[in-house]
View 1: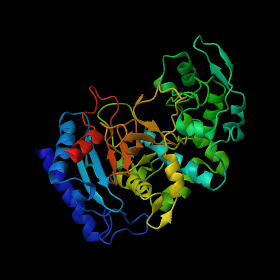
View 2 (view 1 turned 90 degrees about the vertical axis):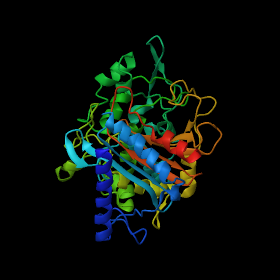
View 3 (view 1 turned 135 degrees about the horizontal axis):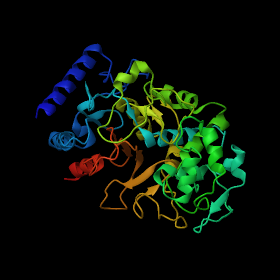
Length: 419
């Protein structure tokens, strides 16, 4: 009860300060042009996203129970429609040894929530004519011209299919994540090649992976992998800029995401969330690696700006980042009948687009309209629900929690909406 009261008092204080300054977290005049000092977030009521006060209390209780159980030190939950934030709740503290209350400005390692951002940047470059979905990866990284595939008995043979940009976006490239498959022969090869190292560039890592066998022929299976890291290296070659500069110019500056970056300066270190469980990266020292697959850090407010752009069909406060038709293309299911789902996270449920996971808005009805989004390895989560006209950003910092994190934002929100 004390923690819940502290959370409520903190939220009231944040709101009062923001409103008194006329900027900060919420703009009473609606959207303002994004910059480092102006928020795009306008606070509405839960009804704006299909919830009521009792629903919100149920969500609070679920998150607070997870904190009280000692699984996470704190959390931030945001649910917004196309223009307004209907729910913004902060809980607990930034870390087990940090008394700073969680806030929309707390920095999180978003890990694989980096992938949708890099995927959007990829399709923006496609619109600019700097690359195409069916381009061979070898057009940008020549080492991918002569790939091999590992057979079940450990032998290798020349790959028949050409790995394309689309294969990287859909995780049908034949690459894997060595860190998630450390006991297999190929996983050991990945780790020995430095696939998890931040001391090398993404391009150097990509070249090392090209010298290793693929797990399968490109285009024949879905398998979570280093594909988006290789994609980031491709973007660097295609645009002639490092990925940090590319994303800053194409996405972060136009959206006003001034707190989203691969590495965090010491001036912002006090805002970085820390977990109770699990090892996490320390993004306070800049290294050569700009991991497009999992290297970004962001805040709830910053990622909400990305969410507002997506739910508004690629446009943000009068600035169009990507065409609505292109974004619709990214949301099309890509796991065809000839692609194995053996390693797909949801097996025969849902699908995958060009950088987004696709799930039914009604999990009890596989044919219901699809949401699109993705999660991060340290518990962060986001998805956009065009049918119900809202999106969600849920931020925690936790890995390998015994018994799980204890709260599914997706399950709880849809249960509240459908009750």
